[in-house]
Length: 201
Length: 201
DNA sequence: ATGATCTGACAATATAGATTTTCAGAACAG
DNA sequence: CTGTTCTGAAAATCTATATTGTCAGATCAT
Image (cartoon, rainbow over all chains, first blue to last red; front, side, top):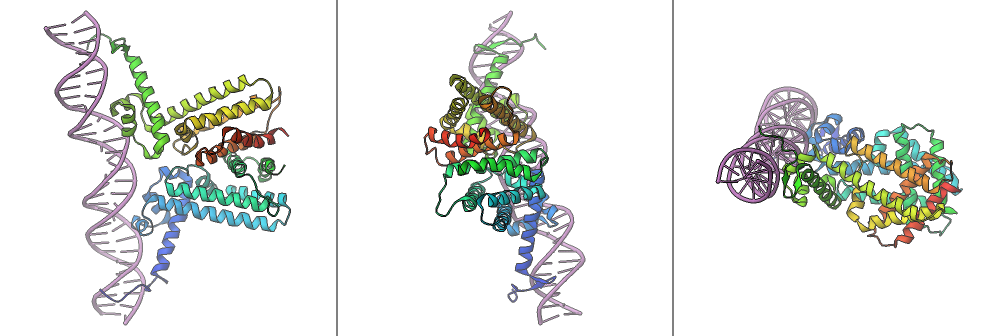
């Protein structure tokens, strides 16, 4: 046993930094692999190869594949949400304009990163209770953002109706993805807004 | 090698009948098991136990678990669709009344058989290309039925918008299921109709 | 320079599950 | 009755993957 080497540097960075970097590499690689072949049909080996790391480092950061999937999902939803909220903020005060901006940002993001889109919207349910919980949380956050964008101060919406509208957004996205993103983002956004209108009337 | 025994009777029924019966037993049992524990977390063994059959008989009727899942999904969607169409037919000619009847029938069915509901709506995507295709087909059929219920003769709807409304129905169902079917069927139906109204305006 | 620790490639093991085979007894046809 | 087919239970095999371990060389601290 030698002295505590917690802060030891290797190729420029400390142990904790290298660890975190590898973890991040795994998350990014897994996002691609899962989006490409599907979580169900991927394995530790393929993810590690894609990350340029050995399988050993998988177990350094995660106990199960589920944990990695969860990390991927959470990173993707967090980034997407930040992007959408920024777009909404930039769009000013009009509720419909804000909604249009958020939806446009959302659909553009799905088109820019199809693999992330697949990860977010396809075959994500039923993996494990933890992942299911994360999905619930993400939907709840989206509902909250929808309320922020559309509600007048103090106004409350029907939660069930909001859940339905979210489902409309998601399935329009799925339909669009299945078409190979055939329609321009603007058309998809306007179609979605028609469904969202049922919240306001 | 003896004579052809294709028509041989055993415990009352012929070979082909017994085979078909076992196949059906497997489908029914698997629908329960998959709905209960999820397809991903079930196996051949558990399905066979639930069916009261040996694993040997699984391979008599199916090559892979995927095939069985597909059979379950197709049976469930077929039955559900028949039930919904019958309800619509009984509701008369008014488009809204027909839609209300179809949705009521749909939600009541999900409540009556929660395991079937889980099988139909949760963790079904991304299992295999064949299953994904079956989902596509089922959604297409639902879109068709929606058009039948709502469209005036010759009228055409926006397919993307219809996909969105279907997503709305599905996510309202998911929300309702997650609540333990807390609200009465009528409330769920009326909420869904609000979304469907975006097709008509 | 030297001993410690990190890294990458790979081998070894463990485990779960699918798939196949065996076998003894029940139900059948003639 | 006699020989054949069917059935249910369990064992044996196969396969893919997760998980752990080994080891030589690279990088580091002093």
